Length: 483
Image 1 (spheres, one colour):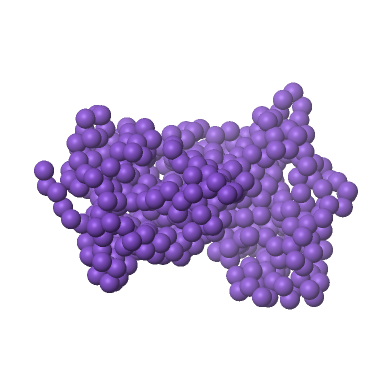
Image 2: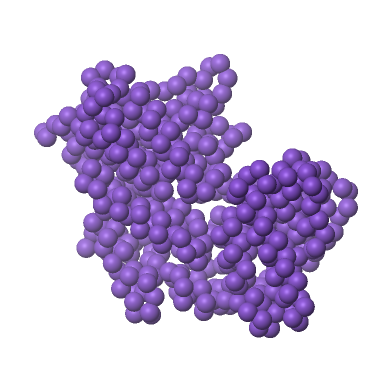
């Protein structure tokens, strides 16, 4: 037995939240460990249920985001740390239990992200042709257990949502396949699917006004540069009153978003004046309508299939309060995609806060509790949550960094108060987890295994003059990683 005296931390989820937290934990321990009586050494074991790391960055964001390559590269540098041990293809609750982790680790941090859509909950939501964004994102991002084909035979489509996922979905539905292939790592099945896409008209419905949307400026700029696509807006949506403008000006990101939307309004006017062109002045063969202040109320169907969408005009006050007007409009569509938010994953043995859609934790400080809220909610020692698992599906990837610092601060504080300088796990043999997994026939993929998958993807991409081409079959990933 090779018992060690370093702190031992298990992190569940190797997406941005899990990787950032691992990095920040080691950095903060290096700075504060001696002062807290913890020492400066820790071993972090990062468990990921998929065969490859990076979670949301690889499988939750549209492939044409230019910044994603840089984020993935930064995450990879963090994983190339001898104190962080990657265990991909190991599912918490199935391959290893909470009790088994607590026996071997001084603390367990959940960074499990989100994979399901919030339900739409409107009449007609179960019609054929109504899709949650999450499944579509899984398809175009090549998620290992996602769909391999996607029906893209609707000529008129609607997208519901006022955030970045709605924007991603709408953009991919309006995308030129060759342009997308040239610039991204999409696999062949996605290229063929988008190439066969029949969508000619897209309606994006946002429930609130121009100043209350939740788009990032980057998303809007990507929307502006779609070859063959004419953007169409309603000028009345941009008649903002003084109170709304003043309110929007208080927040830098909101102000920048509103300014970019006004740029889009001018672009849309120029596109129309130039004879229905795209951003480069070329004839547009697809039309992308952006509707603010419209709330969907019903999907209209015939023979079990969606044939239209009914929306209600809304009004939004300066403070973001939305009221319905009782004025309705109907649009013919043969597919509806709803991007109204994700539902973060549950974790076996951990209480879930259904109302806020995240793992139950104390006042949002990341300390896991016995129940969602109320007087009976007690903090469970040595268990923590970060990212969407802690706060629900809000915020950009960058938000997970500030989250991680808060959680790590709380973890270090708790560890310093624990007996023997936080070293409370009974089994301190670093090889104990490997023996346990091996006894179950579980073959984890480590960082070296991931690098083999990555090298293969780069080699395949290079054959087509691309930087990368994604492998999507989990069995192929395993074969590459274990070769």
